[in-house]
Length: 119
Image (cartoon, rainbow, N blue to C red):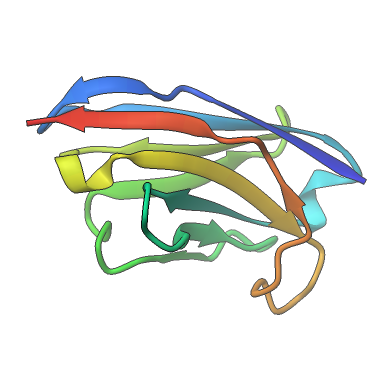
């Protein structure tokens, strides 16, 4: 079992930055593939960024060059550094994890943290 708790959300003006954290407990962290998703009201959930057990990352086109996903294996924390935020980034952000090698099917979810970007 894996437990995920997000933090770091809040309100920021356009152009600002936030760093989200996802603290993980449970099974061994290093073998996990982890990701950040977001969902805005009335919109489908979108995978924002992911990082596999080897440290390879992927990003949605909408956040490339602005967001950076990273993890601290010693602290069991996943991060999402978000820069140059715009109102379209407003959403609830969720942390997800899986032991599946494909990193495309997510078994564990946090409860989310709200990000609001004002213009």
